[in-house]
Length: 114
Image 1 (cartoon, rainbow, N blue to C red):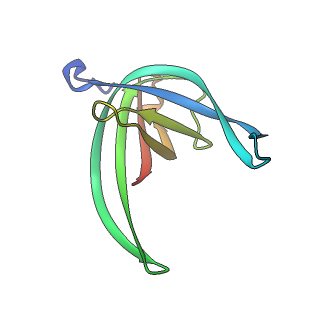
Image 2 (cartoon, rainbow, N blue to C red; image 1 turned 30 degrees about the vertical axis):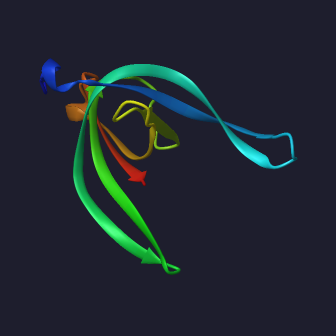
Image 3 (tube, rainbow, N blue to C red; image 1 turned 180 degrees about the horizontal axis):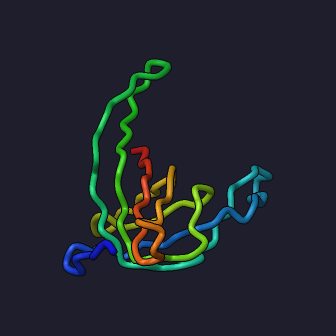
């Protein structure tokens, strides 16, 4: 069984699920997300890359999120976290691994567009 060093789990995050879309005051479709679980996690940047697309520079970071097992987490969800005071980042879940199928640790591969 994989052990998680509790001192490394210093990020409090929210797992969110898409609940469809709604219309705002001017009639635009706006995605709606609801929180399904909060958890303490370790978040590590795996690599960073800058892409030039349509003459616009975007940065994408791939991160590994390690947390205690949470049932029902899927790649259709996202993670909201606050990497620094006053800022919010959204991590788009790409893959969820139940380490050793032991229902103890989740390794979540996610992408952050900045």
